[in-house]
Image 1 (cartoon, rainbow, N blue to C red):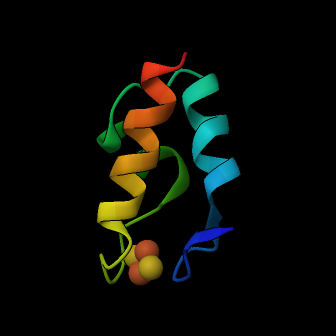
Image 2: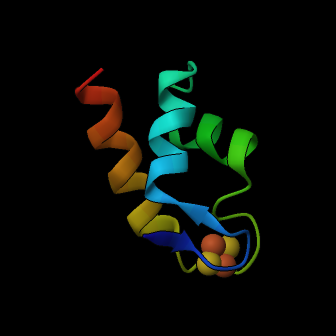
Length: 56
Ligand code: FES
């Protein structure tokens, strides 16, 4: 599903970023652009990032 409409980032894309070495929300933002425009997706993006990092 789309987490970030502004940047077209899916939950899958966030998990992929974590698989590729992103370890924080900041890393995910840098790699995907998620949350860098309107910011509405930040809560969901952070939660998915946290979950993905924990299950790595
Ligand atoms: Fe992600 Fe707007 S929905 S920055």
